[in-house]
Length: 140
Image 1 (cartoon, helix red, strand yellow):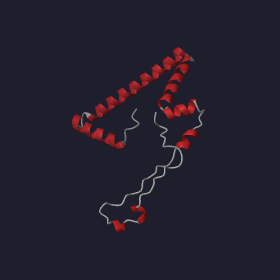
Image 2: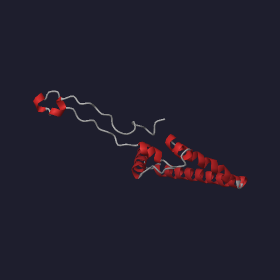
Image 3: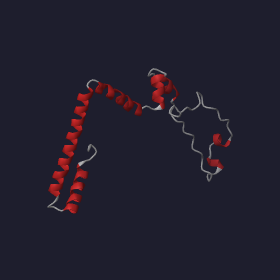
Image 4: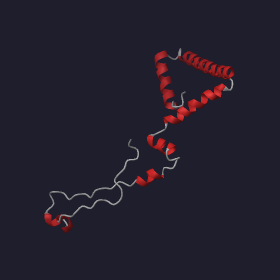
């Protein structure tokens, strides 16, 4: 429950509690909070135990669909296609992945024409890149 709370946050809470409650009431408030949290945890674990006893082996059958739902939360379109249509073989997607092509940098307009190389002054025919067209495998 408090897995993301670090020592810095705890120190800030203690300082704020000290300012708000004062040094004489702070220990009692900490004791009350820890007792309430312990009672809530015991109550929830007791409910889980009672539910497991009442349902018997059906309790594990109830947990199975919940774990399947947890797996579906991380399912992306690419992962779904790979799992169901391609039996986990994602080499089809890997074939279309290519490193990005960076265009050449143009010469500044203020540079004199004599400074530009001869190949820059003559118009050249732009040849299309070899290979398949760009493809985004994560696009749907």
